[in-house]
Length: 235
Image (tube, rainbow, N blue to C red; front, side):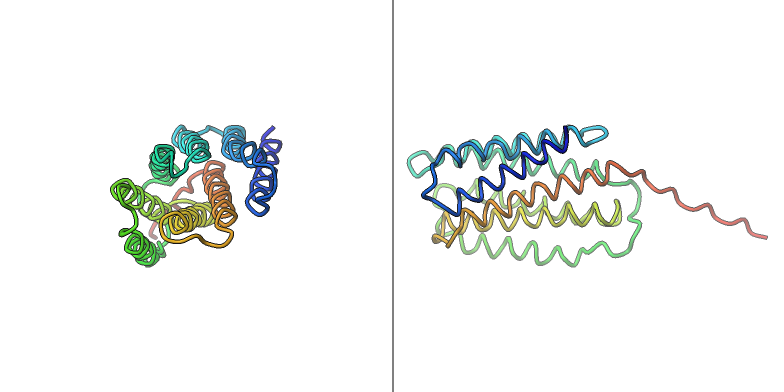
C-alpha cells in the first residue's frame, strides 16, 4: 500500500502544479489536489516507517491542516492565513522534535557538521524579514515568530549531520532548505510584490521539501546505530 500512497502523492503534486501553471483550469483541480498532498504523504510515511514517529505524524497532520486553511485565505478572510501560519508553525516544531528523535546519541561521528552553513541560513532569514517588515502591518508578530521557528527548523536539520547516515542528513537538510525557499517566495509574493508563476514555484519547492524530509527520516529509521569498534588490546 505504501507505493500506492506515494503514487497518489506524486499524482496530486502533478495536478496541483498544473493548476498553478494553467489558471484557466477549473478551480476544482486545485481544491481537490491540495488536500490530498499531505494526506497521501502521511499515509505513505505511516505505511513505510517501521515504527511511525508521533512527531512526524503530527508535523504532517499540521501541514495538511495548514494547506486546507490556506485554500480559503483572502484579503477578506485573513484569519485563514493566520490559522495556516500557526498550523505550519506547529508543523515545524513537530519536525524539530522529530529531528532530535531521528539521530544517534552521543557526539557526532564526523567532524564536518556543516555549521558554517548556519550563517547563510540565519542571514537569509534576517534579510527576508528586513525586506518584509515594513509591509507586514498587524501580522508582524506572527510572521516574525513563524520565521524564527522556520530558521530553527533548518538549523535543526543541519545539526543531524554526523548523528545519522549521510543520506538521511542530506535529504532532511535539503528538504528543510526547500521549505525555507518555498515560504520565502510565498512571503515575498504576498507582502512585497507579485512574482511570476509564484504559485507554481511555491508548491514545487513545498512538495519537494515535504517529500525530502520524510524520505530522510525514513532512511534513518531503517538503519541501526553503528557500534564503536572495540579498542585493540595492548601487547
